[in-house]
Figure 1: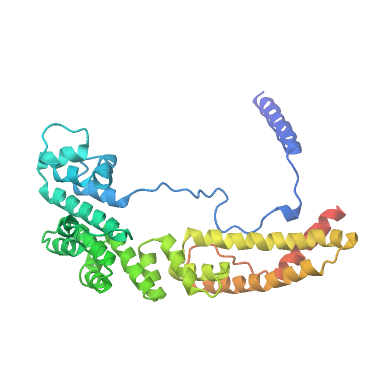
Figure 2: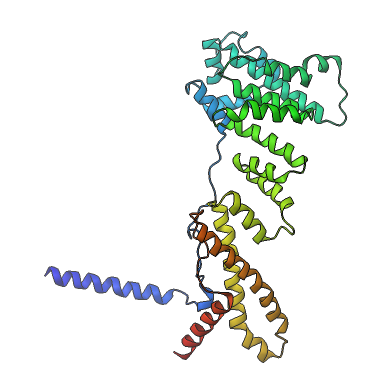
Length: 347
């Protein structure tokens, strides 16, 4: 009896499967992609976190929320920062509660200096700014550099050095920035603050025209926007293949590399399919096909260059990305599809 029930259920499922399959659209070989260098269901969106704020949170033993710390560090005006400890009464902000409870003058003094540096840099960037006596007394960047370098503690050492670099960079005192990096900052443990310093040093080398050094700093700091900005100056025509080679040189296992490779592979398949499945139609219609074929020949050289590079990358074993490792060349690729198409038409 059980076997009969099992058989009936299986037949029912089979009928439903066939019905469903009959409703699905059919595709020609030219509508399928062969090469995949990253998963089909690839999630291109990743949640962004402020690592600097997370490090603040860790510094105080997670006694304040990320949002409260962010509000104080980024949004509090200078006057409010200066009077955090002087004011009495409760506060809804957990970071302020922590500072008042622990009478943490060390952090408050730093926040005040950082806000002064922020204001001074904004003023210096304004082309219409003319310094007043108050600006020279309280927002002088040289004074800020000296105050930052006068800090003798260890708890906020990296953050004070960041303010010194920011102020010196704004004054175009690039030699001081590089000196601070070489003698102090690069020897500090990895952190978001150290990474921010790297961005300024990379910017200095970029302005000096040393793009190789600049891109190393951007790459180590995981600053992709600046990385590509710099990469444009290291290529002849900024083609996709040039960009792939530069990315492979510095980030051989980058997820972005996989996407760039797949884009060209998909383009190669599309071009091959188009030439195979539309050539006969165009020729029969009386149109001149030579222009389309010429485009394919021009792209063929580009695809061959990518294939040679991919084989080199596979041999070097520097990357964990599945890189276009097929032995098919562009002509074999087209012949393969042409044979498949003919075999299906003959059925």
